[in-house]
Image 1: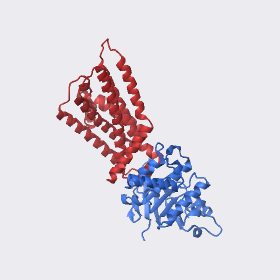
Image 2: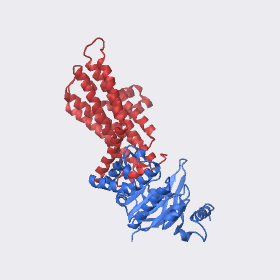
Image 3: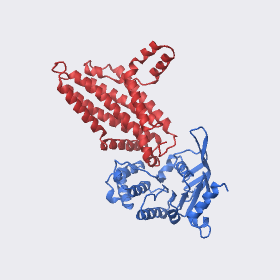
Image 4: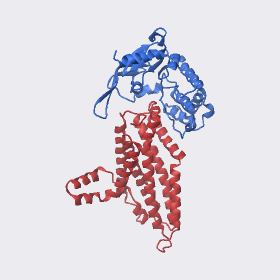
Length: 247
Length: 264
C-alpha cells in the first residue's frame, strides 16, 4: 500500500543573509501510512514548518525526495487529495465562512451548488452552522481554528496535514478537534500533525516523530519511545537534550 | 478550465474585499464632490467651462485610478502571506501562476470598474456644461486607460512578489508617475545630457513603459475626434505587451520563492 507521505533523506538548505548556508533539514526520513495519525514534534526552529512546506509543495528540497500519496510532493495532482490547516491563519476577514468554503470548493472543481452543500455540511460538522454567514473577521480564535479544519476537509482528503490544530482552543474546542481528526482516520485518511501540545499528541496519535536540528531523532508509538514511567513530555525533553548535546 | 476557476475565485475575492472595504466608493464620492464644485465654478467669467471641467476631471480620474490599481495590486501578496491565506490557497489545486493572474485580474478589473464610474461622472459633467467630444474618442481613451492600468497593476504585482507591500506600492506609484509624466521628454533629455547620464536616461527611455502613449485626454478635452485606428491599435498592443511582460516578471519572481508567514 502506498504511504500517504514518504520522505527520504530530505535536505533543505537556505542561503543566509550574510551569504552563508543554513541547513534547515538534514536528511529527514519519515513515512505516514494511510489511516494513521502521526504527530510531528520538535522544538522551535527544528525544521517542522520547513518539512511541511516541502510536503505541501511550497518549497523544493535541496536533496532527497518527498512523495505524497505516491506522487512527487510538488505535483499539482497531489494537492487534489491533501487538506491543510496552516498555523495561525487569519482567514479573509471580509468574507463569511460560507463564502470562503464555497470558493475553496470551486477550486476543487465542485459546481456552485455542490460547493454550497459541502460548505453547509462542513460548517455543521465543525459546529459553525450558526456562524456560517458571519464574516470571518468576527470569528473568535477557536471558531477560526474550527473553520480552518473545515476548509482542510473540503474535498474529503486522503491526507490531512495540520499545523498546531489545537492551538488557542479551550477544552471543548480541543475535544471537538480531536473528534474530527479521529473521524478522518476512521474513514481511512492519514493525519500528519505538527504540535507543541504533547498531551494532545499523546492522546490522539498512533505514532510520533521527534525532529531536532533538521533530523528525525526518534519515531514510533509514543508508548514504545518513552521509557518505563516516562511521559511523552519527559521523553521529548530527553531526546531534544541528547540531540542538542550531540549524543 | 480548473485554472480559470482558480483565477476567477482569486479575482472575485479581490472584488469583494474592495467593495467591503469601500475603497472605490470613497474615491468615487471624492471625484463627484470635486467635480460638483468644479462644475459650479465660472472660469474667467466663461459661462460654459466644459473643457476645463473635463480636463480637470480626467486628470483626477488618472490619478485616482492609478492610486487604486497600485494599492490594490501592491498589497495582495503581502497581506495573504502575513495572514497565512496564501498557504491555504496554494495547498489547494491552485497554481502560483493562476494565483497571480487572479490577483492581477481582480485588482485591474476593480480599478477599471471604478475608472468607468469616474469617466461616467466626468462625461456627465461635461455634457451638462455643453459637451466636448463624441463617444468614439471617449471609447478609445477608456480602452487605452484600461491598458495603462493593466501595465501599472502588473508591474506593481511583480514588485510585490519580492518587496514588502509598502515598498511595492511606492515603487509602483513612482513607475506610474515616471511613465506618465517624465517619459515623454526623456529621449530629448538623454540627447541633451550626453555622456554617462545620457546613457542612463536613454536606457530608462527604452526600459520603462511609456504611459503617455496611452493617454488620449487632449483628444477628448479639445474635441479633436477619434485617433486614427492604426496608431490606436498599436498603442493598445503596446499596453497589452507591457502588461504581459509585467505578469511574466511577477510569475518569475513568485514561482519558486519560499513563502513565509512573517513576511520576511
